[in-house]
Each structure stands twice: as C-alpha cells, then as structure tokens.
Length: 24
Image 1 (cartoon, rainbow, N blue to C red):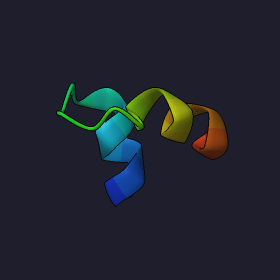
Image 2 (cartoon, helix red, strand yellow; image 1 turned 180 degrees about the horizontal axis):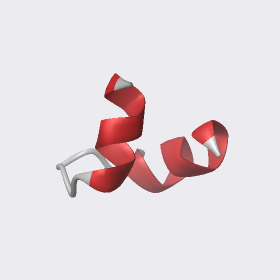
Image 3 (cartoon, rainbow, N blue to C red; image 1 turned 180 degrees about the vertical axis):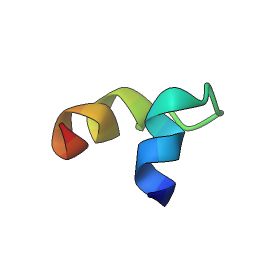
Image 4 (cartoon, helix red, strand yellow; image 1 turned 90 degrees about the horizontal axis):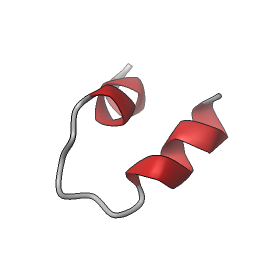
C-alpha cells in the first residue's frame, strides 16, 4: 500500500513514525 511504503521509505514526512503505528 501507499501508506505502507511511507513507513519503509525515509521521506520528509514528520508523520511517518505515527503512520507506522496506525498501520501496525
């Protein structure tokens, strides 16, 4: 998924760690 990719790729989104928890 798109969001899942964000958690794996170090992008400039400061919400990446939060998304990881939400998806997990």
